Image 1: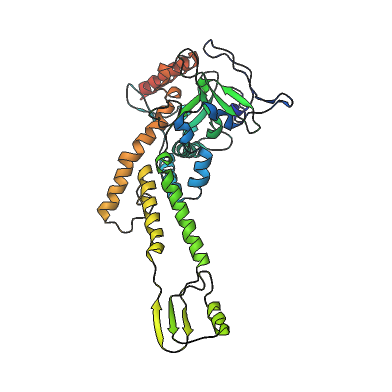
Image 2 (image 1 turned 180 degrees about the vertical axis):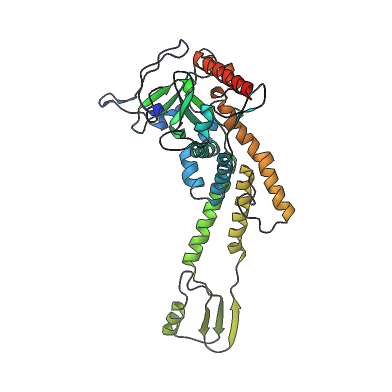
Length: 381
């Protein structure tokens, strides 16, 4: 049994040579000629980013400004990730089509412990959320025993992990992650599984719904701030009862005091002046109604980008039975299959489905052992 370590991708390890290439080594940037060795920041990567990568929302911004403060982004991501993690991860024999029930990958991705901090379903929930929020994608480091079987899965921090291009036509040299204290650590590519929806022009980037719906997310937040500030500052009564005639300064100040501020003062009936009476109804103006239109439009754009209908979020009001059922059908036939395919194909190298195509001896031995076990199990039946 291989020795297990906590978050192996973030811990220093001995240098390894990748496919006969140059040795990987821990690197630190020189902050200045006086201070000597310093640490590297994630922002130092930006110099080599593509235009698409610079325009994209970073995962930290996506979580802070969209997932944690915009209800529609939270519910869309939560619904997709929750429905994905509730499904059982299954493996089928390529020849017979029978379910494989004793593969170690199944235990790691379902109800077993993926690592010391989370179960397989918790890791899969976070994996889905990162694919939907991180423009660079999600990175899973896999730890294997000496027989090449997966024994542990760890999600690397998506904002501090990146693929490093190779040389001489090699698209990928290795992966690189930065620890919280700024140390740059290389990870061999065979230890990392990379999950993302591919970007159309940049092979080292993914694409998320926020890259198309980011402006709608900002509009939804600003509309809520505008409406909240308007309610806190506005003391406009529901109507004004005006009395024609002259008034003195004392009476004027008394009248002004009747117009308080905040929602507690809204809706009151106020009397002004003296003499002939007239009533003015202070109904909502078109400017006030613009908040509702803007919020509704932003909600539609966000949910359309994520492909999630309100019925999936638990709100079927204002819909017929057929329309609500169609929203659920659309979610499970259009939105979920591509997302599930990203996650399932990412683990092909670690399952009997994909280990036959692997070039490593450990994976080949693992694949052969799995096939022999499956054949013996079919013979007993």
